[in-house]
Amino acid sequence: MNKVIRVEKEMLPQIADIQKRVYAYFVDSEPWTHETALAFMEYSYNLQPDLFFVLFHDEEIAGYIIGCIKPWADGPHLICEELIIDFPHQGKGLAQFLAVRIIEEALKKYNITSVEAQTYENELGSPMKIYKQFGFKKQHYFLIKADAKKVLENLSVYQ
Image 1: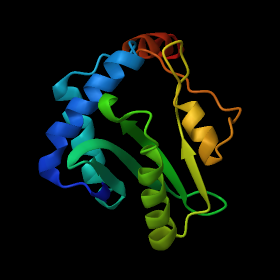
Image 2: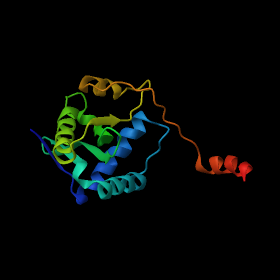
Image 3: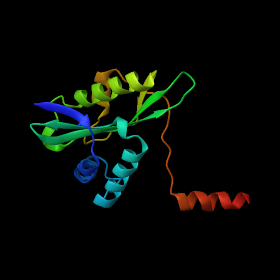
Image 4: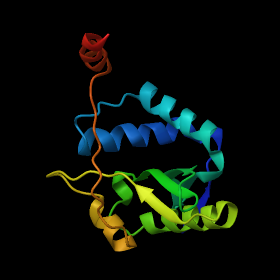
């Protein structure tokens, strides 16, 4: 039995553990701890609690989706920040329940015109396969990232 509900604050520590566990396996360049994952969950919850959903499968938390609304030229966009299914529940088609719930909610409440997500591809697996099944297409944008202290150091030569 699957049930998707809006997340409740007391669920955040358990969800943080899922974030830490899944990222440790798939994205070794992002070493989440329970504390950093919990801080992210609390931030997301405080930012837009109405677009933070958790999926229960057989009465245990199987995954979650976090979204927020970004105003844009063609109307509000739903930004899917995270869509994660915990290991014991992967490969069962559960991500679709979360995607449907958040998109329906965002359409109803915010009249969104678009849905955006960021994901990764590596040799261990790729959520991109799931997103493509949902109808997402790869864009020609680049995620750029740098160490904050190095950027500031590099910018200081211009002052």
